[in-house]
Image 1 (cartoon, one colour):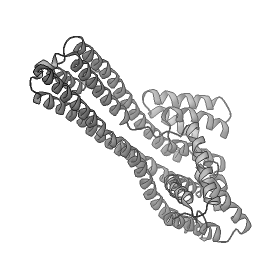
Image 2 (cartoon, helix red, strand yellow):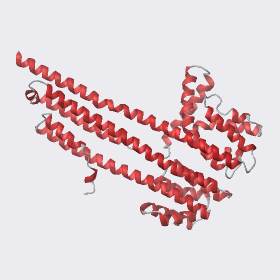
Image 3 (tube, one colour):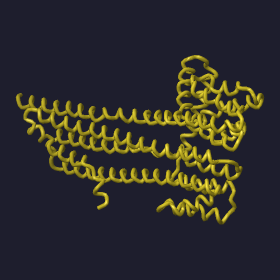
Length: 423
């Protein structure tokens, strides 16, 4: 009974369209059975989508409470105990298991990472991994962290709102694709009604098989569109994608070095600029968190461990230049100088400015940089969203193309039937 509210009106429209299209007998029965099976699959997809949204809510709740509790205790284990009491359902069980495991062992960084990975695996996101790594770092190194915790809290809430916005846009795209399928079915009925002596045409086996296949494809397209417009989780990149990114970055850098100012160089530069804009905000946010407890040179070294592949080579070059001349501005000014990225060049110069400021001025500089980082992060998320939705939106033409082919099929059958009767 709990699945009844998830039943869509679309299968009933398919039922009416197939009935009014003159499909009969075994073809009609098989279509109706297939519509039912596809609807069951869609309902399961809808339940999975609800579970993913629930995980988003639970993951955001977990990160918020963990940061707030850590501010009071400055101990991850104590913060986990607080969260386990407040967290409902399965999340509370997962956090309680993590707390119990750490209580029975030594509180070392390696063990914290192993236990926190299990939580990330269930409610994982790039931001959750960053929260865990930062809290482990603060507990190991000590130091003032209230400002950084405020930064992370703001980022968690901003990420939650962004994910909700993405979900709404995906659902809007789903509605447009569904409307495309429905309009294609309506066009089909109107065309069939316009064919002279259509009742004789509907009795032919060729018409029954051709139109039955077409309506099955309409239903499959509807299910495919539904699956494509489920907002993807904000999870870590898989190893396969990571290896692909490493190969791409290596190829782009080789083209930039060995084919200067040619077509290959231009294409590589365009792709690299896009990738840098996508991943630089994450690296910058990690740097700004590290600057709460580390100096600039140490933070740059440690940021290599989690830096995206596209930034590894520029960062290594930056670190070599900084070691040769620690007080020079040139290493920061030359960071990715071969690319047209003025906003990123500006942020690197602001990082250098942090190294020259007094202790009292650094928090104000970091806050200003965080606001710019937030804007860059929003721009990167929009690029990711638009890139995916643009490809999905083009699928709206597929049902229309199918309806045109079906129209030509039915018109051709009608013409052949008319000619045969008049010969």
